[in-house]
Length: 344
Image 1: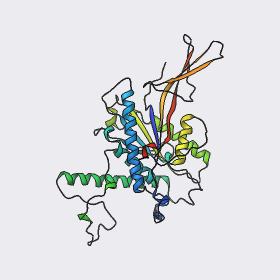
Image 2: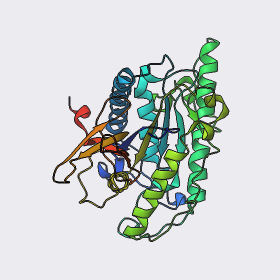
Image 3: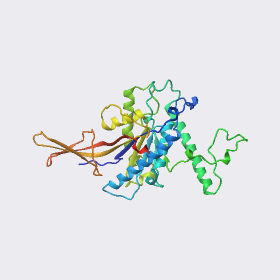
């Protein structure tokens, strides 16, 4: 019998947008952070929102193709590397999702150390902070940003002049920044940040990290992210939406995209080019394979709950003796590192 899918059956992989240190030599990392952590450029923020718009289109198309149509809006779960460029990209994606977002059940954002950059000495000379410190710092920044955002909404609701984002000069009597409005990048879209979520295994950096260890980390993280996308692992508020479809978006780095591609396909392949904000999509589908009695001919075709194609590498097939057909459920890619949505 076909297995029940209690978690997501669709996962999108997205690389972060354009990073500022690859564009401007003037940018300098804060040495107090203990690790290089560049944000996005203004173009990178635009790329992220355009990517969100494209993901929204793909999700809406998939919703329309489902056999069991439901009026319930989809639940969107975003897992991100805690590096600033990935957090910026994730928030930009959520901004771009637009019509896919249910204001009562907005996208859920989770930071996972398992999705971080390859901790190789090719990229870093030294790392002076722990993974837990790094994660806590970004959680604190997001919490402050949320507080600032809700304060801004409160002021607008009461017809008060908007207040500015906090700066290092807030206590300076000569500072007249209170007359300025909040800047666009600080405005948050509707979202829920899951501060209680953490990787079940990767709670610190492993530096220097070998290439095989990096692949193992992404493979484990990919499996855990899917498992924890089931309703039983979501906040109680979202558990009331059991009729909704769950879509997972993983935002990570270029090497991480290739590692996740290999993890989903259960094979090692030559790395492919992964442009900024490229999109890959995997869907969990069932594969039918029919062989002749003599075994000289073999036919395989794929089918999903949406009547789509399929492909995977699990060996959970079963044989129907009346039709001589094998059925397997597999993760199938139908979009690989595409950035066509960014072309104008």
